[in-house]
Image (cartoon, rainbow, N blue to C red; front, side, top):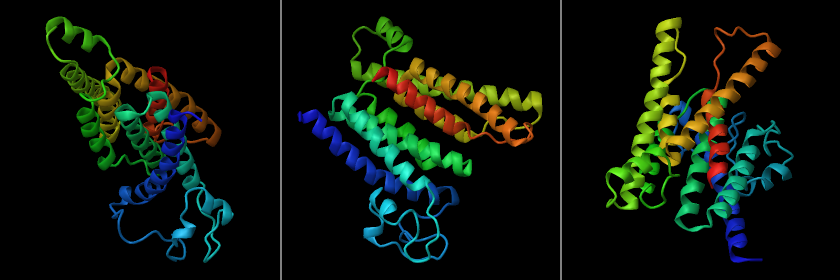
Length: 268
């Protein structure tokens, strides 16, 4: 077993632990609850969850997906989040080759998992992850360059003596502003024309986070892929459930997150 594969497996195992924490965030942050206290407990009977019942994936399987105290079913979201995070950590570390690049893309994956499941479950994209993601993306841009694109080439043409770190930071800032600004403008125009809100500010902030990590072109690909997925699957859902399209609230952030994973896969 080579060193990179071993490190990737360890990253995947660490991702399972992070996924367990993300489950806490998904359950609590949209409701403004602390992620520290109280300790994890069954939402039905309130029984505290012992450490041996809180082992990622394994505890769910051993308990057959039920609370040890009251036997109430445990949401399948819990193992799904843990498995998704572990798998993405393994993949990100492997494809990035470890190092700071691996750290950056594992962090990106963790934020995406939280936002995807949080929006799907509560239609809320917590600021702790959208705004925190923007800050993290901009802070890491000089260390691990964002994928090159038009902004990078334009900056290099105008300032050939500039350092690669500054070039990447400028690209991340510009991409974050342009993508989020463009999405906000589309939402604003939609609201003025249709008389109802088409996008929430959470979606705009999430797009800014994607721009900070992915750059302009890759971020735009994520936005387009997410929009296409949301449109197609949303329409199928409306038709299948007979819901009113005018009042249906699409978890756009969830589809945007899936689009971002697809976009990152093309550049890593």
